[in-house]
Length: 314
Image 1 (cartoon, rainbow, N blue to C red):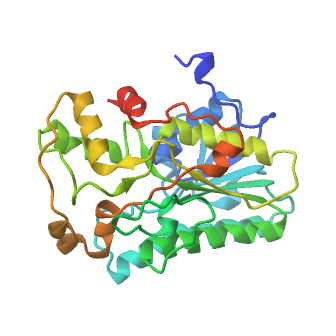
Image 2 (tube, rainbow, N blue to C red):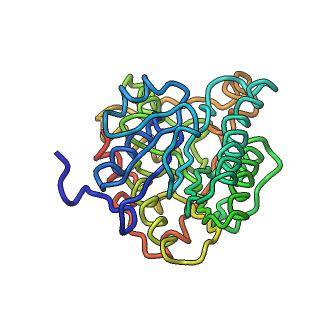
Image 3 (cartoon, rainbow, N blue to C red):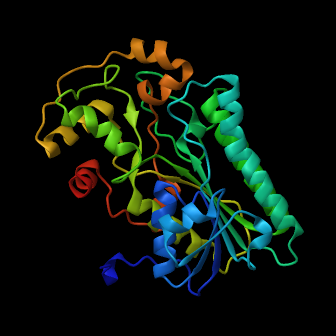
């Protein structure tokens, strides 16, 4: 049962919400939170029947944007999994199509509507900032520049596609997410070596690890929705990362203590680089990303440090 303290408030009045990526780890939790708060939720998906089974009867699942009712808010979370398959030319094209291409379709659909949504909550990622070299401890706030590497270019093109909605009078809120920790997603895979007693520093362990608890992601979406409500349309960007950024080795030690397992076995970076190529930078290099604008707007993290987050999730 959901307690009153767990209820997340999205705005002041019930809205019709279109959600992409609704069958993913974050999307399912967001759909549930929106329904609990009294909003109408539609999910755009390739397989409406399968999505309906996963999301329940309170969510409308459609394969065509033409089948949607009038919409007030769009939340765009869609995107193919970035870590796993090698970044061949074909895989890069798939990643771009699932982010930039899908977002372009959304904005094109909005342009044809007689009544536009007033808000687009657009997911992005801290990959926008590229990677920091070993020994570079510079805090990265929202003003930090991108880099000429694929993960950064992917996020730049994703955001630029969303920003075209601003020309239609839609408020566009960009949310650059760190690694989202929850009982699904990346965390179970990260914890598996530790559970097996094989945890330890990865590629030296000194790289920064910018993370956020999934509940704080949902709460940040609600918070920025509220900030956009009743104000002239803008295009703000927020880093959605916990203020307790830490190094990979320290995160591994914290997780091992929580699971009562050892954390001593180092994993060298070279085999990962040989196996994954440029993609290995997602694991072996890091970013010290701070949520300056989110904190400055009055947002309070429920899980500001990794110890609290791991205690909740483990």
